[in-house]
Length: 237
Image (cartoon, rainbow, N blue to C red; front, side, top):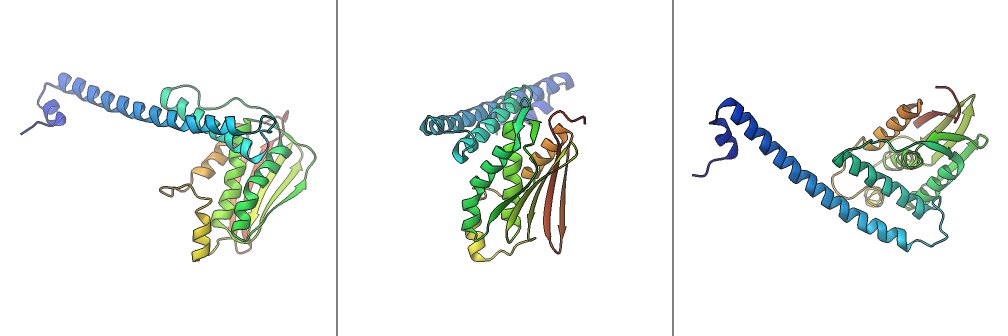
């Protein structure tokens, strides 16, 4: 009868058993890292193809260019998570209006597919934030996507300023039903595979914490409100 590695390790002296167990763990981790790097390589290849297929004069603020930028940033973060290195991308001054308008455009058609709308109420000047551009786009996408997936009625994005703070609020009509048509259309929004909850809002909270801001989610009979507050560029935290 073949011996399991764990049984073999258990029959050795303590030091040798520990060394063997450590070696087995390292071997498994090495195989896992190799598999992840291979999958990441296969993900980069179609992203490169998409980048080359975009018009040469395309703007990164346009829906396709912005989505590609966020996908590349996510792959780079995954690379650093697997192979080591700082997880946080460098922050820089980002004009908010193009980022918000790009996010609105990305989610307009998915909202229409659900017989809903996404509208913008701009009550600010031309705010600039000190943040990683891709992470800001990811946070905006997650807030709007969350309202479409879990809420109902119109989604309203409100931008306002109070002193040296920016207020970004996403509202919807509250928890939505789960009829056959709704479930069918939501497949266009949710990523294929196992449905995991909470990752998107963790991205929003991470951005708020990194920038010295805050994030709150409030549910009531009147609807759901997700409020992200961030300091304007140059503001003291």
